[in-house]
Length: 363
Image (cartoon, rainbow, N blue to C red):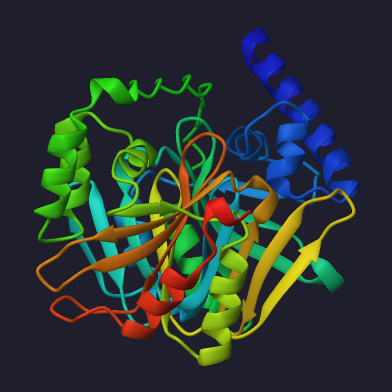
């Protein structure tokens, strides 16, 4: 064994020990990794190979579409996509996949994903102790910075024989993932550099919500910047507590809504009603707004939301209204819509609810 390999093994042992200590203090995996100055992906990589820690990790071949497509025989699994402020958890079967280049879709009644494989860098099969003596089994995928893009967890009804067969097929001990630091965010161009009149004209001419992304690129405009420049007609700043009445009123009226939550490499969508809305403040001061429904959980940290917007996009089917939440980095962390199919008008009950939300000026 050469000196480089010996040092790497020693470093991994130190990482595993420090991570175990952080987890023993009750920290979640992501927060425990951050507390020792590493990304979650780097910590997972340090747990591959033989060791005595309870967290056991196997590296996976980078065949992302093939791995996901092989999961259907497993039956019900839990899909988890998160960002810094919101966690989206949905139970269902991984089926209904299609792929074009590096973009894939999974679309069925329960699991609805938009996947961007160009952001996927490393994958691991993970086994770790859970609450009450249970064993947690998952597949976890990370970008080059070691930030989780998507996770998949075993549920009580999952076919474990099929699950183990997927891991056996795709596990590869020769894969060694390395991660790099995140790059600084690009500065948002000054509002004065954007053709605001042209932006408003293009916005008014939209025929499909997907036209929005091309429009931003055309005008060199950042997402929230476009809202500021069209404020009043197409967008309005909302009170930061607007998501609470949104979820509570949707639950009270059984209004079917769509909840989009994205990481850098995946967007996960819930379509349907929500029922049990539970606010919670942790001892550390984190303020969570939770949806705790059978088959769907949403965990939204209100204290990390720095902006909320009501947005109106013209389409050939009429106005489509969304509520969009942002964190301090300027990333959109969650979007809410009324359930609708292409060719259908927006639900009037959803539009009425969105329009009734308190504005920022009413703080």
